[in-house]
Image (cartoon, rainbow, N blue to C red; front, side, top):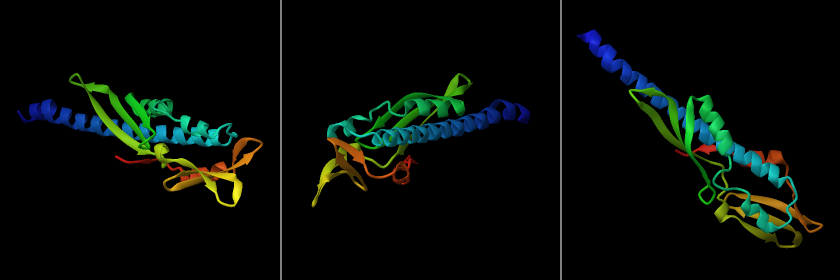
Length: 171
């Protein structure tokens, strides 16, 4: 009797809880990987001179970072079922599904990460007394650019940006 209950009820419950934890780890890893890939792409693009100020706002969109998120989910025995970087909210939103089934069910979870740039709140600003300097100004972050031969060149290093753009989980 007791052995039957243990084998038929308790072991599957414990395994289901383990799979749920693993799918949450996969969701967290996928969200952070997506945000980190987004950071890498932004820094790489900022190191190339801009032709127009408007170019900067069009770099990121819903799929930015999706490949890295899928890779990290797969490393954690899951697959991404939904991915989107919501630039106005600065949220990488990921849903995953575990690849292992228990009684026909797969564990599902979600996670969100942020990078620290709410793109919809960012604006170009002039610097008084410095007509060639422009700031890409976001809440909590101002990135200086210098106008040089009709192109905007960033005036900080990639390391400076990496210190300020730090992916972190938000849920």
